[in-house]
Image (cartoon, rainbow, N blue to C red):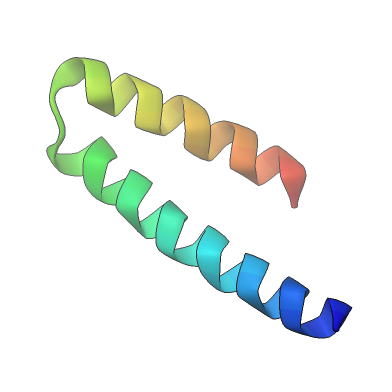
Length: 46
């Protein structure tokens, strides 16, 4: 059961990261800043 949760969490993280990267590239200045900060904090969790 925990394996399934881990797999789901990793795929969720990946899609979230892609969305954040997209925001960081194409978002407004304020959105970009938030996306970059969030990506930075996600890296620390790994």
